[in-house]
Image 1: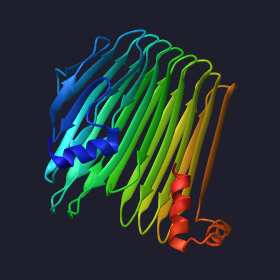
Image 2: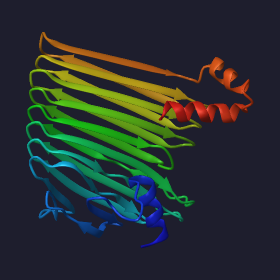
Image 3: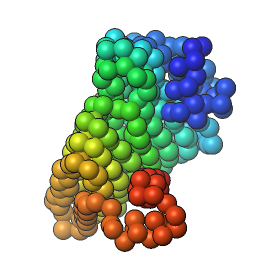
Length: 305
């Protein structure tokens, strides 16, 4: 295994030399290692690049790791992964992605993940994105996530992009049946001339379904961010969308949450706040002996935690 591969694995999937359960490591467009378990089966998709992951009903406490890595420039990786989660299963999925380039050619990964959760299934989905290397080529990651939640199913999605990615476009769609819940936490940092776009769209079709989406981001340098969220309530349901952003230097954030209520008992809320770090916060930390740069770094780290 190459050193850059090991470094990326440690950063995006908390790899410590081995994976605790089922896994597939995708390296530069090909599988670099795979293991299934009795309850979690991984196989190649018959109709294109990617995996079919089947989680047996009632599976509890297991983890499946599917990191995807681009270790050099000149790679434009596209992968389709389908997750079929059986009734009552409760599993963690770790799907980090790292792109690395040391020259003038681009390194890009585009992962299209589809989730089909049966009745009362519960998934914790962890996704961390990172760009590394000193090359002038673009580090690009463009994830697409499609989610279908059966009755009473819950998907908790925690996604972070905290360095090195020059261009990213995230698109997430979800449809929720009765009693199903979608919980999303996004953390995003852009610097220099980096650009990031996020688009969440949720259909709350079932009675007592719900969605809770919270995005926190920091735009520094001359970076640009765009945030879109759309929650549609088609039944008695609850929906909450929140976007909080800090702007530094000449950064810019364009946030537009949208709510559509098609039912009299749809309770939908959105919040958005964009601004620079408050002066009193900086002053308080500077009185403790920190420089302005150190104070800003500490505030940003706490905000994105």
